[in-house]
Amino acid sequence: MNWLRAQNSCMNMNTEIFPRPARSRFVQWLIASIMCVLPVHAEPEAESDPAHLLEEIAQNLGKVESVFAHFVQERHLSIFKESLRSEGCLFFQKPGRIRWEITSPYQSILVSDGRGVAQFERVGEQWKKLELGLADAVQNVVSQIGAIMAGRYTARQRDYSVGAVRTADGAVVTLTPQQPAMRRMINAIEIHLSPDFQTRRVVLRELDGDFTDIRFGGQLINLPFHDATFDRNKPADLNLVLPRGKPRENADGEGLHK
Amino acid sequence: MKRTRRQFVAKVGRNCAALAFLLCMGGCFCQSSFNSWRVSPVTAQDMSAFEAAERSVREAFPPGYRAMQRAIITVKQRQFACDGLLVVTPADGLRLALVSTLGLVTEVRVKGDGPAEVLKVTALFREEWARDFVARDLRWLFAAPVELTPAGRLADGRLVLEGVDQPGNVKARYSCSADGSRWEELEIMKGSRRLFHASFSGYRHITGLDRAIPAEITADAGTHQLHLRIAAIELIEKEGL
Image (cartoon, rainbow over all chains, first blue to last red):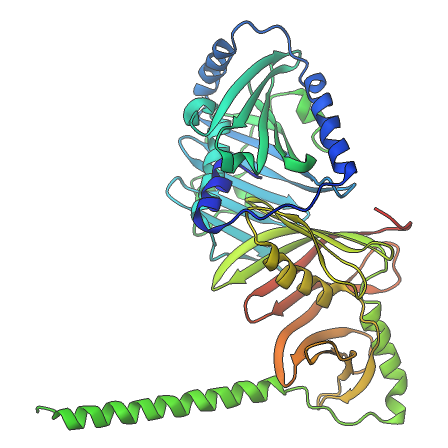
């Protein structure tokens, strides 16, 4: 996960920008390649009015009260051939309850009950609650996940501009940072939606060709969650809170677990 | 009962003296704990165990591998969870990318005895922190030491090896199990002061390697504490990334 507002708030708190090392030719080539490839991936159809599409998405996602999804997160780093890959589950309940649980290759829970955020790490046979540093920034990360799952893309227009295109597979919403501090860290956030406007993929494109690709599958919409799902002091075990229901089919779900 | 000003000053003075005494004693105790690795001399019959210990330290990790690490870093009682992608090859040395919930923290490279390189600086982390802490810890924990010599046995029978003297009067010491089969601890000394201490545990076998590797490391660097687990690891057969 790597989200704009959190980074920005973090930078405002205590960080400085340092001169970057010179980019290698390879990195420059990679950036150029990605720039060339992007429009091909998006496969945009003629869209007369992005605002109309965004409104349509917001209307559809406005009916969503809760989402459960499996996810695969891959972080691609330009200087490494391989990616950092993790898998887990997302629970989202309006207005701001989130549980982001990584189940492989390690176990970790990031949970917000809407009032605060907590992080737990599985060490040995026990869950250990962290004395979380930069909790405000982490809370912003969680809020950003919630905003994306709820389709509230236009809520922070001061921070980024919002574009949308309809594609053969659904729609792609692109958030482009507007603040200079944000633009030093990230190029864009792409949100890929299925034809029925489920969030099925989020790509965070950073500078130097790095990107994080999060694919969602096996989504269950508007099912009630166990009360202890979002408990910041002792979140219930995953097996206890996994919702029962038939996931809605989508193309991303098929390819989720490579 | 009213206390006179003189009585009050005298009492404060006594308390300060007591506090100063306790602080001195505390300092003494701390100092003695830093010298806990008091060793008895090496004997001829220890040599095969020391050879095994040297191998255990040098070959604690394979020469080429990529690993995903999960680290909890504690700084001033605040904790940060990070993922680490570590790629190690004989040709390129050790490359580490550190990623937090908030994004990429830094990328560093350590090559043999050469200087550490900070490959990527981000707004989340200062360049000097990447060099002074991340690259330094990476070298101490994961780079195989160049030369080791037997230093002796601890009272509990464990073996202690020493690295070569490094600039700034810095020396690494390694403790291993009594038979030399497992590397257990590392301490970095600057003169008589301990700069860094790490424990290695959670040994587990990985595919393609005939020995177990330490999959859990806890370290105390004074400025920060580190709890690191190797979540996934695979060998790199050929050199290069």
